[in-house]
Amino acid sequence: MLDLWNWNATAEETREPLPCDEYLIRPYRSMHRAVDVEAPPSTSFRWLCQLTVAPYSYDWIDNRGRRSPDELTPGADQLQVGQNFLISPIRDWERGRHISGKVEPAVARLYGPTAITYRVSSRGVAGSRILVRINVGITGVWSRIR
Image (cartoon, rainbow, N blue to C red; front, side, top):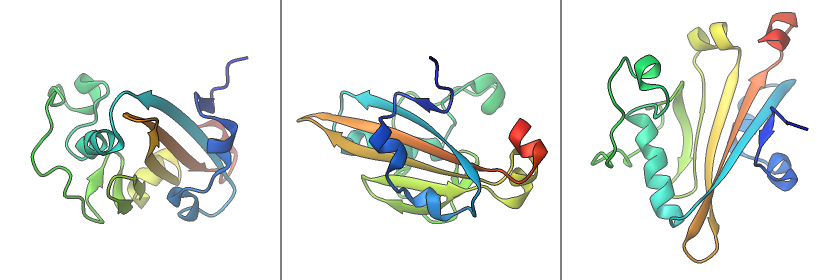
């Protein structure tokens, strides 16, 4: 059966605490996405830092038609609390480990209260694993539909 809430994340990964779990008051729904990467954690984390530069999704929608860079942007790994990261400002980060944020009230009005953590971990000698958890607040009927 297809699980729309957890894609490629292990049961252990869905239960372990992450920084975004502290940003919302329950109840909230957690969604997980995980991928194995054939690169060391330092390289995977550096590419996660690129999400402060561009969305790396549907550029024609999410990046106003501009192409997301296919090379690392110098200085993008110099993260700061409050810096824009996808749909939220960075609330907490640890070099080589995770980037976490919570959406601002204006975005929360559209999508609901949302918190996110992108975490990188080591996998074998030269590999890494990226786990994303998105917590979305459940505040009523509309949020359950959303």
